[in-house]
Image (cartoon, rainbow, N blue to C red; front, side, top):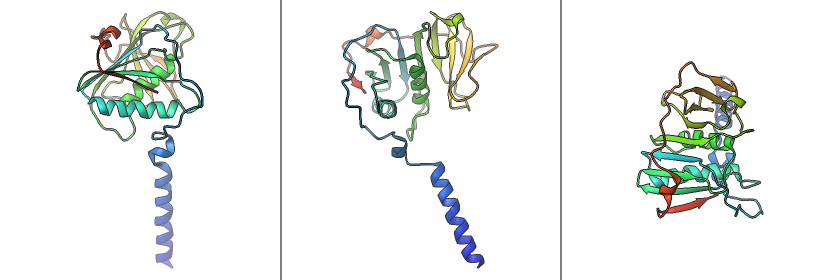
Length: 206
């Protein structure tokens, strides 16, 4: 009887573990189905840019594809131009623009991709606008830097430092927006511009 109970207990534990850690495809990371809708064609001027340094281009591309697989199920939320400056320097730009909230989620996802392991310096920059998610009135029209510090243990947020060196945590699930006494990282300007991607190997991922 004890053996039967032990077997039942082991099966129950295995079931719980499997439920807690589903296969990536069950979460849509590998599902490349797209809506039966035309993808964006009209370009929208914007200054959003993400620079990934230290990870190979093909690995960054895979992480972006996963993100698009998740977000582009019912509509084209994220259409990303990926440009290769070198084997370990990639630039993401957004010819059709992207919502600020999605831009934050993407910055976070590049740092924590599913079943992809790399160490890279990932930073994003943009000018905030009225009605942007997470952005209060005092931070409208501010040029900001988004990032995840190496010591982060929350996993569901992104950090923001304004050009005036005011720091915030933008919490996705809990916590909301929290102003920091000092920014986790000081503001630095982006070393590359959108124009630097011209005439570089590029592809559109959606």
